[in-house]
Image 1 (cartoon, rainbow, N blue to C red):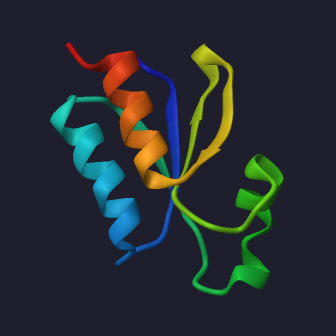
Image 2: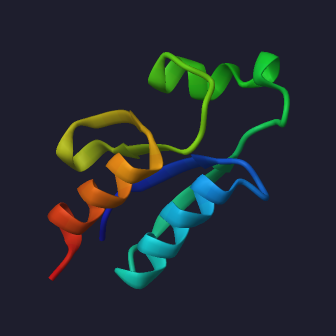
Length: 82
């Protein structure tokens, strides 16, 4: 199964777009909820170099911290879509 991780924020519409695509493609993923405050998002900053979410990690394909929901959705469709 895919070894996907998603850094997301509850109520974030951009994160919801990515989780919807993950669900559509029936992909398992580990969710990491980040704090509301950008100052407290050290974990996602270590992964991606920035504090915005969503951020996708796909270790199997050497994706170490992809930001931007549109880019993530496009990547998931290309990599895992049928």
